[in-house]
Image (cartoon, rainbow, N blue to C red; front, side):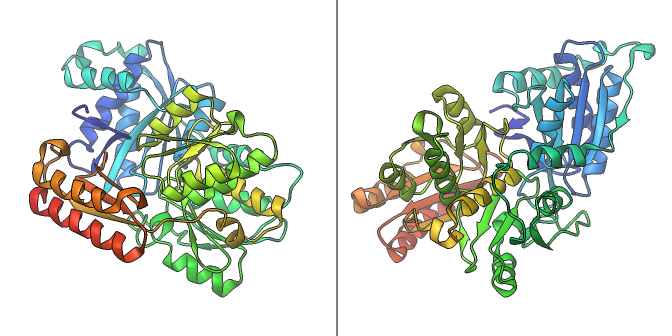
Length: 447
């Protein structure tokens, strides 16, 4: 892993290295330089964090100083920036967001002009340029500096794009939907897109103030949404994360529906329509065992990629898949977009409900969810787990005890100082007991 770029761009506490104004300025300069083009056009968008203003200004300054033309779209979901970069035939798109992290964190991730996230090699080239101390020697003369523009119609263009991903032969006219935008980047476009398609919309957590993004709301905290769906008699609840690339749903009974269940529902719909390319669903090694079992049951192939949406996408492209994602709610529908998009995922889920005429609670039962426990442990360092005998000892012990009735997955977060301990087992009690045992050992050794 590089010194700055992690698994999803650069991320950290805002106003502290590496997520400060100086680094944002240097990223802007370096991106322009590696594009090797006079006056490249770069779209910049952000979520609702208060630190977004500082980082946006710094990126704008860095880009213009190196001769690029930044196009500022303001608050827009991450996949919206990817779309705008493609739609405008821009040379790159930059997103200022830390996704599902709390407001004090922020991040910068970069898309190519074709809408895909940059490769590891491209990120390394940017990083080398930033850390090499040569940027100041590459600056153009004053007459060749760039000019910044503000785009006022990005929301409308993105909403039209989203609506066009919903099947034209179906309708959600009058469907009651509760939408939780996590006080984040979807707070304008998500309710508007569903409303324009005819749904009866109720919004919660859609009044961002710069510090309430992801705060006890959104895809990671569905308690309020579950209550509201039941109280209002809604058909479904839709919870997005701070930057809008994830979706977690709530059925009409107030039960949370996982990303794995949504993937299966949508893949089955595509298969029934004859549109599931190569009969393949791609998820990650973190996916519930129940997903693999269900894929066999419904007659399509399943492939488990490494954790991270970039690895899911890589394997989808390599294997010729059009649907893939993570249990966390990050899903990619390649027939519609080049990156994960929570609103597109929601529209495909709604399409499955309408096409089958079944409530979401019934569709969710297509997959038996194995008892699963996930514990996040804060760590002060991230040594290769295989080199830590105290931790490997307890992992091997639990794996032996579970046998074929479960599995263990222990891995570090790519974006936070954290170790994720996940155990699946035959019962909730056994699963929790084993997961806690491993988590306690990780905390004792690395916490």
